[in-house]
Image 1 (cartoon, rainbow, N blue to C red):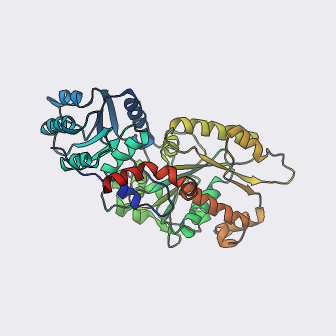
Image 2: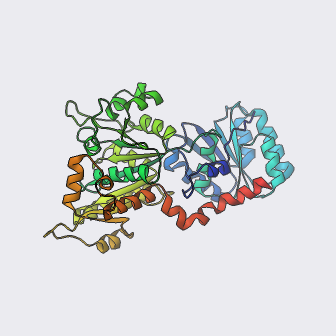
Image 3: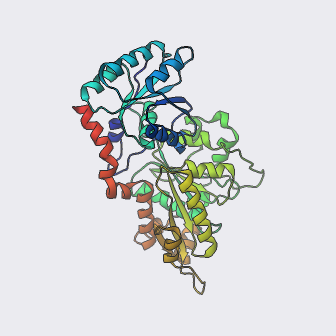
Length: 425
């Protein structure tokens, strides 16, 4: 039979923090088959299959609508999710779904894409066990959001947001920026957060937060079979009421040749229970580093004001824009700006080349940054009124979607508000 087990997008909307943008969680390892009637919907479904949130799922797109679905499953098992596009309404659509229900395996969930905006039709579809009804035309994120919502419990917290911070070049202070941004997220936005130091041999998060935990992220990476909520909780080192640390060992006793999916179990477990995870990504280009950046919800690239950083930042932004077409482009900030007697590129040079302004321009201040580092403190701890502390607060708002939500809240919510009215009608 067709199982109704969806968590509506309106429920997801209600669960969001005030001022935060709508967040779509990753889809688990499931099989999805879509049967489309129009080429436009098929193109959107193909684009959805390539979305980073669908990396673990397998989505196959076919033409033919409900007729093709009935033919395909008469002698074959059904997948976890079936997506049906239908231009018909009323008895024709309902009759086809009744036939589909007779051959569906237990637990299969059905999403219907239709063109009739009718509350009576919607209620009848839900009564018959359809998990979601989406009004065409759809974009890729509409489909990803609908599939994602099926696998979230109604009373579950929103899946945690991952913020990846990476340097365009080594030595540009990306870790310092990551740690201070995480501190601001936890302290100023009151979001429970974790800093995950992914630089296993040379990570500095333990030093920056004045922590020396006996265990850390390497224990989870090297023992993936042990990763569960209790194990991860034991590895976390508490920094403040809202901030914890998953520290790197920072030792050279072994070589960390990690697989592309090495961090996946850790990220999945963190996202299940913690609203914000700040990933301190080292400057390297490996399979797992690439996967981490592509899979992150938000990306902040830290640059020093020179030509090599500009080139690397452009390469990163161009690649990530291509790999994440349904996401907001990466943000970047300039750090260590104004070193005496050092020739530097101007922020306007970066803006012109990257076609976007820096999210922050952080001045070179060796006294403040050096003192904070030596004391194991954040800038805001050392001097809450320092102008750089305010920059980190602004970056924290950007990383968690607070700024963008205020600017474009109407455009973000318009599609869901229309469906909310439909469901409340």
